[in-house]
Length: 169
Image (cartoon, rainbow, N blue to C red; front, side, top):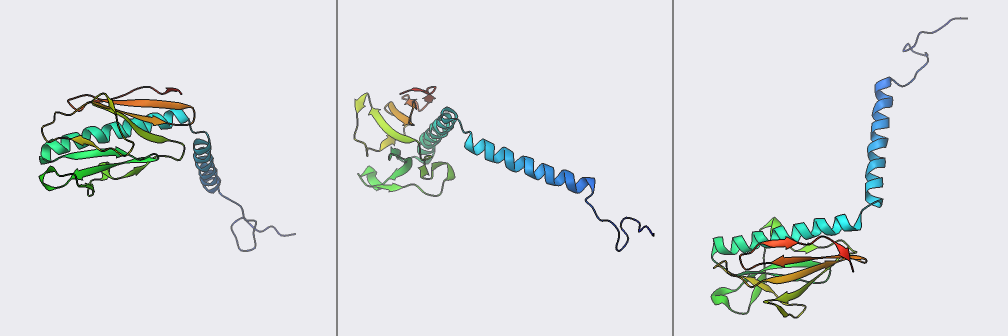
């Protein structure tokens, strides 16, 4: 009986320790991604979207001052959009483009956004909240809501946005 050494033609073949470790790491990373996707926390998702919208609103207000023009934000059920007021501050608004932070944003399927008040008054669902070039704006409140949780974004007259902690509806 003759024994053929490993690695020689016709010899026994197997996996190296490095190959086995690479496969285990890939399986572990894939499992972690699947787990993270299926085990999402609705409050965490709501908070992330609230902080994102709050930061975008503050950015838009600063941009309006910097560019000396009127910008605005509107909520549309499953998302929000930023706008630029037409020449001579007419009633024409056009969708803002060219700024990744202020691009139209669709919320995750379970969430909805609604403008509740502007200058302490209820507003129409399709209203556009203006950010004036002067930097002095009326306070407003936007609600982000999911099936069980909701949070509020409060804007003050000098464009600071406070995001409440999620609470049960």
